[in-house]
Image 1 (cartoon, helix red, strand yellow):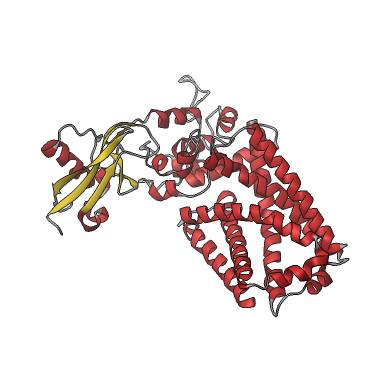
Image 2: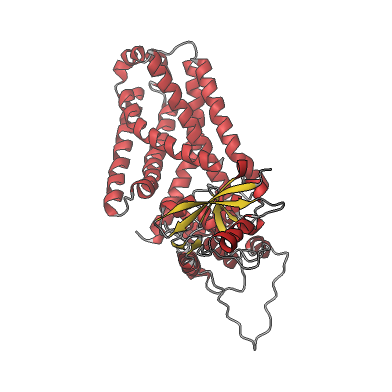
Amino acid sequence: MSRRTETLLWMAQRASAAVLALCVLVHLATIIYAVQGGLTGAEILARTRGNTAWFAFYAVFVLAVAVHAPIGLRVVLAEWFGWRGRARDFALIAFAVVLAGMGFQAVRGVYA
Amino acid sequence: MSRTLALAHRLSGIALAIFLPAHFWVLSRALELDAFLAWSEQPAVKAAEWGLVTLLALHLAGGVRVLMLEFLPWREWAKGLAALAAGFAVAAGLAFALAL
Amino acid sequence: MSATLQVRVWRGGARGAYREYEVPRRESQTVLDVVTHIQRAIDPTLAYRYACRVGMCGSCAMTVNGAPRWTCRTHVDKVARDGRLAIAPLRNLPVIRDLVADMREFFDKWARAQGQFKGARTRADDFERISPDSEARRRADAAIECIGCGVCYAACDVVAANPGYLGPAALNRAWTLVNDARDTAQGARLRAVAGDRASLACHTHMSCTERCPKALSPTAGIAGLKRAISRAALQGKL
């Protein structure tokens, strides 16, 4: 992998981290607020069903996660398991696709 | 302090990477949300949820610290960042626990 | 204060063992005093390095009770909890023998990070005027005092986990040159310090900054390199 690509991966990691910092803060605040007094499926869905704002928010969230998590794991796999090279990178791309796919399924599940 | 936080940051990242697919899967089955929520009333599950919220807050705080160190000009005040991050995670965990 | 110290010292190469010595305790004693006493009065076969013994050269760096330090500047009172000391060679470097580490890899990485000045002027040219107050020169000056002692390299967790990682000292030196307006090798240097083997691998544990005996901050320099590399990548210059 070229130095330029490695640098761009690093930048994507930091950029997605910044996006996630905002998303997670909102998400944490929402969870803590929503969980008070018990939580029902109806309450969650009442908030998310047909709500384009929440849909957009979670879509961005999922995308950022699909970028951030695999790049993060890339370093862990190299440093703690000695796994470097193309096979590792392909596995992580596959993981990114899975995360994005499942994430969007989830967002659709609570929006539709 | 920074080394410990960095380790916690890494471990929480791994845990979240493992947890997220499961999280997405549960949400995609929205029709069965109430059944899932009933199951999640068990104290063991509540404890796990608390753990996840704390891990999320920890990973966020550790990550923000890295972003600050890498992109903002800093000198002496950088030393307190690790403690601040840990404090934020504890606060978030407490807030969640109290809200339950 | 106990009358003697129980000192465990690493003997051997990569494979070896700690051997225990009893050393008389003295006032204002440094760890280097302890090692020197062992070699002169107890076991002349002990191999160790030192030169200036006054905190200027960095040759006496060793691992003392788990942390890399200059032994000539480490008072026994500060580190010998209940009269016990454990002394080993610097971490992350091959051991030649006993307390002597092989510094070649440390300096090889310095070279690989393009840690040498490359100028364009000759003695026939006029001096280049650099203001000591300029932003770039201030940044270089904040990092320039490194004497290559290896303490930061020994302290670094990423060096331990990632054998190709250039390490804090090499990158810190590269940073001083990136900020040197007279240097003409900036392109090659940025390429040398980009990528997974170089500045991008730093995880900001800050062990280097914590342990540097000259109070330098390689973490800050490496962060600066990260920013410079990102800019270069965006401009297609990498």
